[in-house]
Length: 97
Image 1 (cartoon, rainbow, N blue to C red):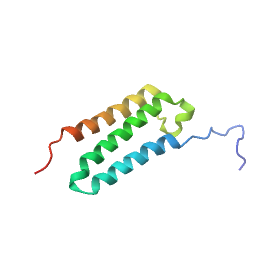
Image 2: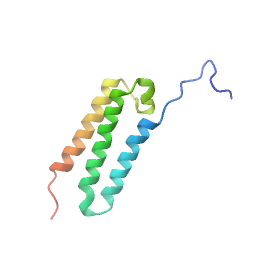
Image 3: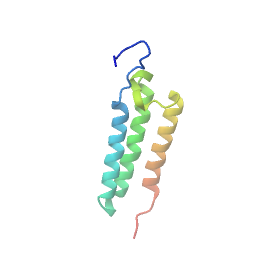
């Protein structure tokens, strides 16, 4: 099948989404390493989501690639809200006994 035909969809750029997924994966890995690291891992997950919100805000729709789901405002709001919620919960939950 020939690429770039009349009906071909523009190629999506995967790197913005890969940055967020890599950050979330790193945070989850840190979280499962031990009982003392769950808070740091959770903060890393939240920060990765906040990085995604910033990426979606500053990149054009075309450059955002696979990070684009809905409109820019909706995407930024959801990523920022979830990122802030995860960071806040990680910092507010009291340590275990």
